[in-house]
Length: 105
Image 1 (cartoon, helix red, strand yellow):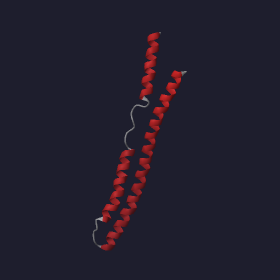
Image 2 (cartoon, helix red, strand yellow):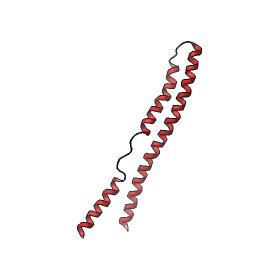
Image 3 (cartoon, one colour):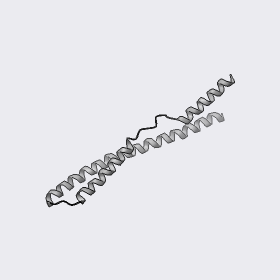
Image 4 (spheres, rainbow, N blue to C red):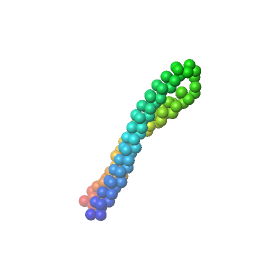
């Protein structure tokens, strides 16, 4: 029974880790979408202000640029590939136990 409890604990630990990775990617994806929307709005406003003033000011590029930078960083984080192998410690433990059972029988 203790052995099954240890399996459950190991599964819970690895599932929590996988869930937190997925949550971080989801938050990064939502942040990327919102930052892109803010960038588009600020870029449009900067364009209108630039045409009204008939002169260039660096703030008209910097403010939307910060939103674009945030969108790119969040998109890179959101698109980071997932680990190829799920639950590696649990699989290794099951394989080890199966090998021990084969050796005994």
